[in-house]
Image (spheres, rainbow, N blue to C red):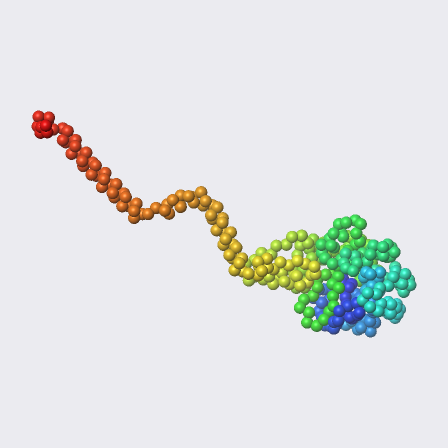
Length: 344
């Protein structure tokens, strides 16, 4: 199994942004990500002297290559590390034809410069902008069997769809000084050795390309310090200040075209508003739960305890008075009529 990155930039060109290459960063990248081989693929040029210097300094296999603007798309053309003078002369012809960012060569010009395309490994931008157009892929014929994609999702999709090219994913990185982290976009190829022939042979078979060494295409390395994630759903769980946000930011820094919704960002980063919203929702839940007792509570809250006690006292006094007068009346009625005074 070989871990490869066949799309690396070391020299800026008219098709690229300005940058200053750092060999130390490239060395660190190769060591930290445990790569087995890389390819130097600058835009429409090949710097032979720099390539030889890089090859001498790195302990792994380094392939010479070039990223060509072909019919408004990009394609990687990679050679075995031999006969560099011939490869250099051919690449200089590409450089001479492309004088601006909008220039590109035709298929006919490509085969005029590189008449034996089968000698090289050709990897077009496939599900990656600017992609090689379908009609150009048809012209290239059997020389095309794999294509570069930009994401894990696209890699997996190409593997499952029978009409798609065999996917590969690479860093497409410019190595400069003091890089905060390194990309984790590499492809594992189930090759016996690191020769170009061996790699090409495996890139005809979807069962020989992987995102991870041990877990195949079910997991991938998400950060340069070794965090492994599933290609399905991932959930990070932890208490406050345990590194969840740091981990997410570390992951996001290594990938392109990723939507990252930061904490409280949907509330314009206002934690107080978030707390207020939670409190309001909690109040609504409480009110809905207690609504059956609401009328009773309102009635009870209207009771005047002092007045109510006074009314009770008055009622009891009245009741006592009534009882006393009723007792007297009963006694009067029981007196013998001859003893009652004549009121006439």
